[in-house]
Image (cartoon, rainbow, N blue to C red; front, side):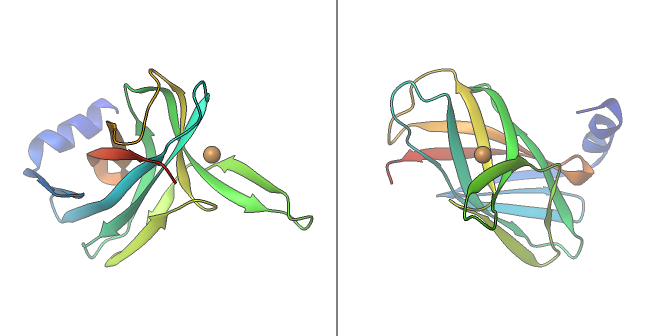
Length: 150
Ligand SMILES: [Cu+2]
């Protein structure tokens, strides 16, 4: 996060709300609501986990998810899963993910996800971790993810 974004942040009224499993953050005319944020439980010693959520953009302007940050992981990044002609699955880093105006995008297994590398501790079903979702226009949504066994 750079100085320009911090300046923008300071000048805008910022409203943060938690209600059950959903989280919303507003800055200026942008409103993002994150729902059902979860992390798939991984076997002990796993070097990477994946996080999923539904991201709603309730504003009239497109917003871009540009990355993630969490003190609970050595590195967090946006990934997409692709299948080639031989039906081999591979994952690729994504610089940004568009959340169209008045629309939503689902991060889900087999699709776009937040790759969470080098967990600081073993995470078990029921644990909660906060991951900062970084959007365009300097919007940061601190989102509570619940670890689920699936
Ligand atoms: Cu991945």
